[in-house]
Image 1 (cartoon, rainbow, N blue to C red):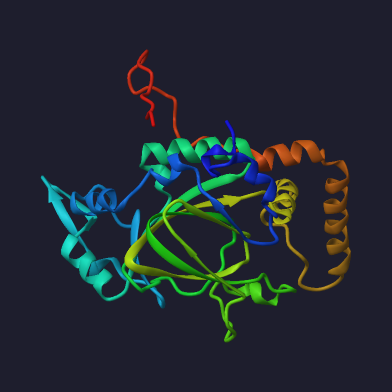
Image 2 (cartoon, rainbow, N blue to C red):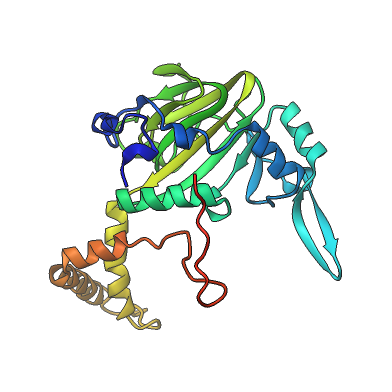
Length: 300
C-alpha cells in the first residue's frame, strides 16, 4: 500500500500542503484508467445505476429526478429512479453535469481503491465522478468540507480557484459567494491531478470535447468530531427528562452540567477517544454469501 494510487510519482505526496494550498500533479495511471466516457454511457444506457447514485446538476442546484428517471415495474413490484437515456442526454444538452455519488458503494475497482486509501490515510475516503458537456460546469462555484484529489480522465477542464478566506463567517454556506476573479486558473488534461484543500473555492468548465473527472474526497478527523464524541459520552449519562426548573435557581444546575463535562474531559483517554473517532469500516465486505466461498476480488 502506497501513495501510488494517487500520484504517478509517489514522492509527490511530500509536496502536498495539507489544508493550506492547492497542488497540481501527475495522477497515477491505474486510477486515471478506472473510468471513461464509454463506461459512463453504459451505466446510464443499461440502467446500471439508479437515482440517487447518479444525479443531474445545473449551476443553480440539482434537477428533480422526475426530469430524467422513470419507475419500472417488475412483476408486482416497482423500481423508481431508473435512468431514461434520452432525458439524461437532453439535460446534458441544456448544460447540466452528470454527477455519480459514492461510487465505492457499487463499483468494485473504486471500492478497492477507496478502502486502500482509507487504510493508508486513516480518513474516510469517497469517490465522485463528474461528466460535463463542452463548455459547461453544471455545479457552480462552491467549496467542499473534505480535501479533494481530482483526477482528469477524459477531455479537459479549466478550474477557477479561490484561496481559503480568513475567519469563519464564510462557512455558513458552501455556495461560493464572491464577485471577484479567481485567484488561480489552470487547465487539466487526461492524467493530470489536482489537490484542493477543504474550503478552497472552485468552479470548473469542461473543454470542447466535454469532460470526465474523478474526485476522491478525504475527510480527516476534525476537532468537532473529537468534541462531539466526548459530549456523546456525557449525554449517555444524562437522563432524557432531566431539565432546568421553570422557577427558582437555574444557574446552579447549568454550572453542575459544565463541571460534569469538564470532569469527563479530564478523565478521557485521548488515545482511546482518537482511536474510536478514527475507526473506519471497510467498504468491501469479506463475508461470503455461501460459507467457504471467498468473495471475489477485482483485479486491475
